Length: 213
Image (cartoon, rainbow, N blue to C red):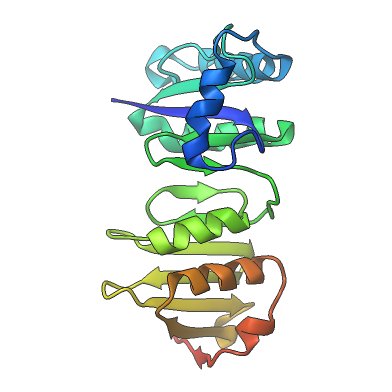
C-alpha cells in the first residue's frame, strides 16, 4: 500500500479544494530548478539505503509537472517521508498537500513550533489556517493536539466524545499547569493559535483550574 504527497509553491492554492486545478495547470510544464533539486535530494537519500529500507515507492520527480513534485512512499514510511519533505521543502517556501487527508500544509504565516496531531503525527510549524482546520476535526481514536514551544511550555486540547474540549496549558512545570473545558472547537482553535502567536489576553480571561498529573 502506498501513500502520496504533493509539493507545490506556498500560496499557489488557497485551499485543498483548489489544489487539483493548480496541479492540472502545471501538467506539461518544464520542471523547475527547485523541484529538480528537491527530487534529486530525495532520490539520493533513498539510494543510500539498502533496497528493503527505501522510503520511496518510485523515483521522485516528473519532467513535465512544472512547479509540482509528486512523491509516492510505502505506507509504513509516511512519518519519515513527511518529516523529510518538511526539511527539504519549507526552506524553498513550498507547501505539502496530502491527498489522502485532503490537507494543504502551507508555510505561509507559520510559527515554528512542535505540533503533535493525535491522528497524523508530528509537524514542525503551525499556521492559523491549520489550527482552524485541525482542532474542529479532531476525532477518535486520538482526538488531541499539542503545540509545544519549549520543554514544559505547551498548550494542548483533547476532544471528549460529547464534543467538549479540554484545553490545557503548561507554563514551565507541574505547578504551572492549568485546564478548562470549552464546547466550541472554533474558539479552541483561535485560543491555541493566539497562544502560539504570544497573545494571552483571551486566554487569561478564562477560568482556569490547576491540573494535577
